[in-house]
Each structure stands twice: as structure tokens, then as C-alpha cells.
Length: 167
Image (cartoon, rainbow, N blue to C red; front, side, top):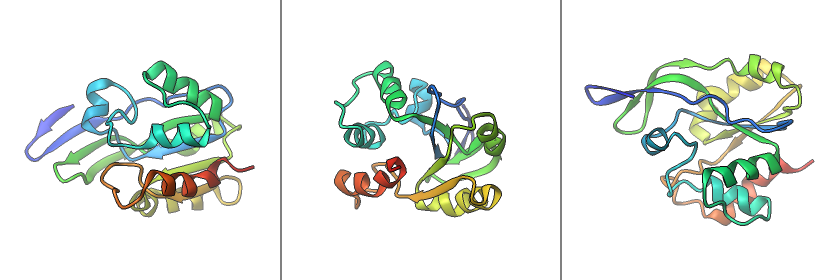
């Protein structure tokens, strides 16, 4: 992570894999707290882990090893759409280089669903992915799990995100 004027140049993480992934959850690019801890969704205000634990009817993981077990249980892989980006101080990402999502899904044919974390992200890259995959992969437009999306309760997030885990 390098500072540049009012922004930070951010390098994304590699995919956080599980055995036989079925769902790819895509964020935009890691936030500051996640980068510092080298962990996906590390900010305690982000409700991703709480939501996944609820949906799996599991206890909330207390460390990253337990979080990885939860992903394994749900057959979820985390990744970000962007490999590199310029994270602006107001949260917007600019000057980005995308990851090869299509190639990644082709190498992992058990993935049948992509969940886009955030409506704005869906507009930015979810629609593009749905067009690239056509009917072969369902791309879901879902509400942001970030604490910045405070108008969505955990219960409402779970309700909306549950469609990803239905058969």
C-alpha cells in the first residue's frame, strides 16, 4: 500500500479458496483495516462474517482460521474484482486493474454463482460479468455488508443474501 496525494495505491489479495467452491463473493478491493491485518473483511463494522455465520447457523468465528472453516462449510471463495486500485479518501476506487474473474471461474468449474457485495459494485462490474457469463453463471446484485450501509440490518442482509445459498 503506497500513499499518493489524497489516495492510496492498493494491491488486492489472492482468492481465499475453499475445497469445491460453489459461490464466489466479489468485493471491490480490500479496505485499510483488511490490508493491515492481511485478512478479508477484517473491519469489525463489516457484517460479512456475522451474516455468513447466521446463514450457516454457525457460531460467529473468532479468528481467521475459524472464518476459513466457515467458508469451507458454505463452499464460498472470497476475491475482489480489482487486482490493483487507487483507493480515494472518500472510499471510491479509481485507476483500477481487474482480476481475471472469467479465467478464475473457468479454472474452478464448481462455481455456479457470483455474489457482488454492493449495489454500486454490481453497476460497476457485476453487469459486465453477467454479460460475459450469460446463463452459465448467475451473478447476484446484493446489498453492501459494510458498516457504511447502516440502513440495512443484519436480519435484512441475511434475508437478501440467502438467495445465494438456496439450491
